[in-house]
Image 1 (cartoon, rainbow, N blue to C red):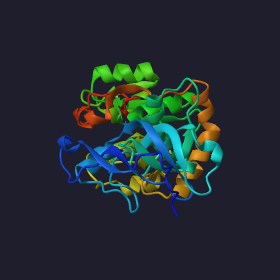
Image 2: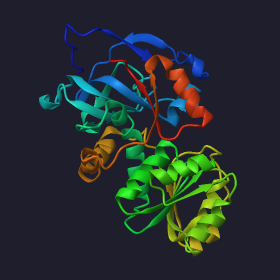
Image 3: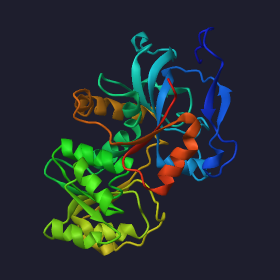
Image 4: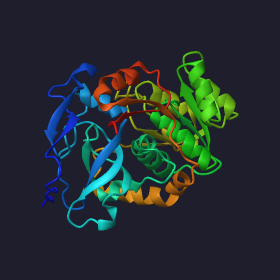
Length: 339
């Protein structure tokens, strides 16, 4: 049973919760009932929420929330724990945390499973903390777990200045992995290199397949992290070394691809992929434990920080979406809740 909220707490909150899909203009603040944490959950007083491409797809009606998730968009938040559900350690009350959500982040308050929360260390702003969970969980589970990259590998990551791309650069740099990224302009190439990419390829002026072959001396890369899909997939396979791994996490150019199966067989390639949002809380909590053990010390000691683009007040969520859709951002876009 959900826990009743303290009598002093408001029964409503401000949130972004469109009644119908549409363009950015549907993202207007509305009043919604205060959510209540169930067993194993916490209620977070949100101070910042990350903006991610799945939010844009949901707003347009192309990515409905999984069963049981709120209709309010937003997959990551940072704030302080305001109330506890049954069975949650009382030490969490009042703690600063960031959390991965299945939805509900574009609001003054959000509910998250306690196992999907990570502590916000000193020196990390709430905006920075809110920019971490979605990209960190996504890159970790796909590049490090599914593609099992390790020190000394070279990998190819598309969208090098996106939230996913910049997080991939950060993690590869921490774990001694060379990362080649693709970007859409020379300015973005410079930004990616400044953030720590080993090589940056402007896909509008260069053939990334040929450049990867040149960079690797014809050997190819150990893994490709791909959010493009469509006709990029067979080109990505040409970039892989023998026994290489191709991991799909989005399909911006199409959900279908024609691939040379004989090449997959002959070169022993692995094609895999995942979607994080529909996975259950048990899986996400296990990932959080692994991140807490292997990655979070780097956050606590200041070695891992998200590359930040811009912050917008919650009421300007439409502008945040317009900026992401325009493709001019470098790093993470976040919404802030005022105080």
